[in-house]
Length: 194
Figure 1 (tube, helix red, strand yellow):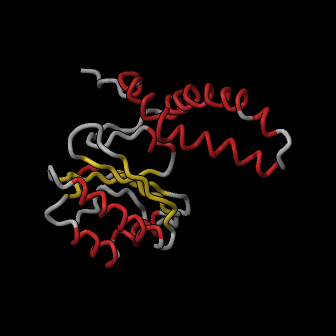
Figure 2 (spheres, rainbow, N blue to C red):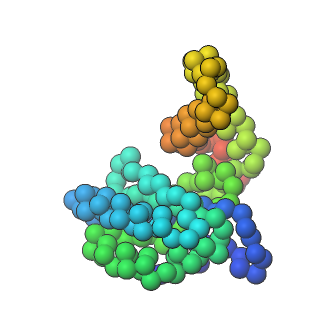
């Protein structure tokens, strides 16, 4: 298995969380088997030390699936990638799907909202990522403040505080940011000058 696309530096003891995106190509007609496999490997990965979650992105068209894997640090991600447990899960999917090793990406910041699986495009400049995230978050924050906050004024502070991130983060990650980054794609990823 090729780990060359995984950008980790073991010489520096980085303790920042890391996110890796893996792309899978599924044979036509084998999607249901692949989905069952994703549930199993996700449960397995969730028990692995340092795992902070796995999200699967379903394809809009075609047969490519993307796994977004979060680990506490690059070293623990590397341990999962080279583990016997993961190798066993990969053996089970043989003939059903293949990991496209050249499309593996690894980041430590909000670049995951802007990464383009299947391309070699680099993440946009940070100021563009911040501005795009603001454009997505501001209307959502306004909506939460208007619709939800007035109904939670009698709640204890810890309970009120959980409402905001529980609504904001999943909505940004799964709904708003993918659509907004597609809408602003030409601005975020301009064609290189000739």
